[in-house]
Amino acid sequence: MSVKENYLIGVEQLDAQHRALFSAISRLKSILLEEDFERNKRVCKELVRFLEDHVTRHFSDEEAYMRKIGYSHYARHKELHDAMVQMVAAMKAEMVASDYSPRSIKHLVGTLLPALIYHTESVDRFIGKEDPPSETANNAALAMQKTVISVVNELFGQSAELSLEAMSPDTLPDGDRTYTLIDCRIPQGERFRIMTAVDESAAVWAMNGLFCAQLEPEDELVRSALEELNRLITIHFVRNYADGVFAQVEKNIVLTREQFWALRPTYAPLCSLIFEDTHGTYAVSAWKL
Ligand SMILES: [Fe+2]
Ligand SMILES: [Fe+2]
Image (cartoon, rainbow, N blue to C red; front, side, top):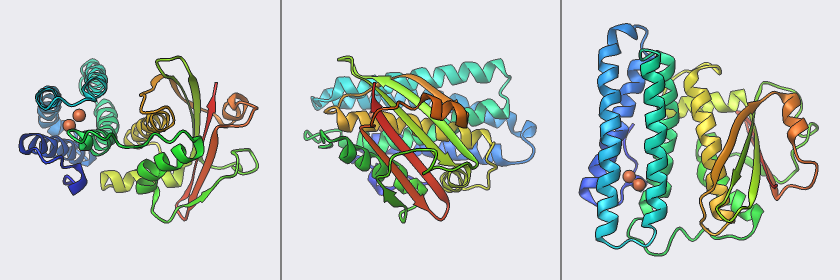
């Protein structure tokens, strides 16, 4: 996996660090996918340590650069870094507790890869550009469309067809699907519920592309990456909807089909989108709570 042109921010030191981060994740991922994990455990541990150090160093260098140029979105950007450092620390603890089990490392890779791609492409890219990603669309449907286009469409295929139909047991008949619920709030206090339903086939297809692998639906990489993507979509959606404010996620859970329909608010959502292509369906709805 290489750093795409749109990940580059034009500051040599920071771009080199972005490259190093992506290549370490890519190496870690290749080791995980090999049969004999035990044999590679030592390399895995080293790579995890490298990632941990490098994420911390990269963030502090990037923050120093933002301060140097007087970037006006510094505080908000730093909050995202701090949250990611905390996330890595929590996963490191999980890895140590399980003696670096493949599952715990997959949890790290599955979460960190989409998180870093998203952060580098959608947040870092705007460092030094004073007009923020003018995504202040105070229109929920537009905000959600922009979100899905930038985050999901790329993953679930360019040809996905968009439908504005509301999410219901009729529009989403029974099938192998992952159902999730995310509740979040913005600092001023508004709360949102974002619910997603994604066909297993679509998730596996997307994650195979992301990880360059042939994964099973129950693989920890698929599960973690899907969870992280749903979280990113939520944050991105709220950011578009609420004038650039980052949401705090309060709850991010996987539900059964029964729980999913039971927890769906009965009033009209802010917006509801269903993406369909040959690989399956990705549906998302957002409500104000
Ligand atoms: Fe960065
Ligand atoms: Fe950053």
